[in-house]
Amino acid sequence: MQAINSGDTAWVLASAALVLFMTPGLAIFYGGMVRAKSALNMMMMSFAAMGVTTIIWVLYGYSLAFGKSQGGFIGNLDHIGLSSTLDQVTGAEGHQIPVLAFAMFQLTFAIITVALLSGAIADRAKYGSWVIFVGVWITLVYLPVAHWAFAAQNGEGGWIIDKLKALDFAGGTVVEINSGAAALALALVLGKRDGFKRDPMRPHNMPLVLLGAGMLWFGWFGFNAGSALSAGSLAATAMINTQIATAAAAMTWVAYEKKRDGKATTLGVASGAVAGAVAITPACGYLNPMGALALGLIAGVVSAWAVTRKYKFGYDDSLDVVGVHGVGGILGMIAIGLLATVTANEAGADGLFFSGGTTQLNRQLIAVVAVAAFSFIATWLIATVIQKTIGFRVYRDDELTGLDTTFHAESAYDITGNSNRY
Image 1 (cartoon, rainbow, N blue to C red):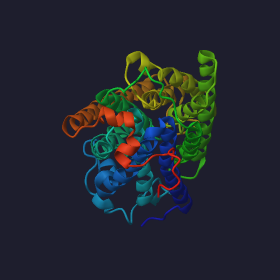
Image 2: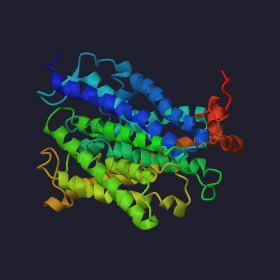
Image 3: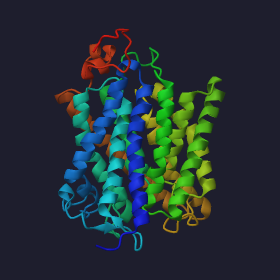
Image 4: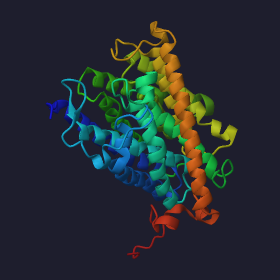
C-alpha cells in the first residue's frame, strides 16, 4: 500500500461523519415541517434511506459509481462487496487516503440525496413503496449520475467530469439538481395532497425545523469542504465560502419575505440557509469569498420566489425540494460559469466575469440540462411503475388519519392524556 496521509484521512473520515449527520438533521427538518399526524413517517423515510442505500452501496453501488468507466456512463463490477478496496488508496500524490474512506464519504452523499426526495411527497406515500423506490432509484438514477460527475479517471471516467469537463465541486448535479428534478417527477406522479391550496398545511413544530436546519448547516461543512479530500487550503476555501453563501441567503430570503408579506419568518430563515448551502455546493471550491457572497445573496431571493411557483403551476412539492434544491443547484452550476476564478482553485477555470469567456458556462449548462432531463424522466418512469403495480399513493382515509398511526402504529406526541398507556 502507498503511504497514507493521516491528516487528510482524518479530515475525510470526519467529513463523512458530518455528512451522515445531515440525514438525521434532514429528518428533523422535514419532521417539523409536516403536520403532526405524519411527523414520524416523514422522519422514518430518511432513516429508510440510510438503511437501504448503505446495503446497496456495499453490494454494488460503489462499484457502479466509481469502478472503471464503461464508456463514461457507468462503472464496472470489479468492486462488488467492496472487494479490492481494503488495501487501496486514492488521491493526489502526497494526499493519498484509503479507498474505504472515500467510499464511506461518497456513501453519505447517496444517502442524503434520496432522502431529500421524501420532502416532495410528504403526507401521501406508502412507506413500503418508498423503501422499494429508494433501492430502485439509487440503482438506476443516482449511481449513473454520480459516475458521470464524480468519477474522475484521468480522462477516461464519467462523461461530465472527464469528457465535457463541467465543474461540480461537491454535488450540484449529483445531489441538488438530481434531487430537484426527481422530486418534481415524484410530486406529479403521486398528485396533490388532499386539501392542497385549500387547507392550511403549516409546519407543526418550528423549533424542530430550526434545529434541523442548524444540523444541516453544521454538516454541510463536511459536505463541501470534505470534497477537497485533503486538509489544506482548498478545504478552507470551500468551508468559508459555504458559511458566507449560507448566511447571505438566509438574510435575503427573510428580506424578500418581509417585503412581500410584511413578516420575516423562522421558516424563511431556515429555508434560506438551506438554499444558500445548496447553491454554493457545486461552486464552493471554485469561487472566491466575494463570489460566494454574491451567489448567496442571489440564491436567497431566487429560491424564495421559486418555491411559490408550485401554487401557480399546480404541482404539490410538499416541502419545496424543487424550489430549494433544484433551483439552488442550477444557480450554483451557472455561477461557476460566471464567477469561477483560478485564483481560488488552479484546477478550475475562469468564468465569464473573470475573462474566461463562455466556454465553461456552456459546459455547465449542458451538465445541468442533461442531469435534470435524465433524472426527471427516469424517476417519473420508476414512480409510475410502482404506482401502477403495488401502489405508491396512500388511500385517502389513511392520508386524512395520518401516516404515523397507519404505517407505524405510533404518534409523535402523546395527546391522549392517558398516563397508563404502557
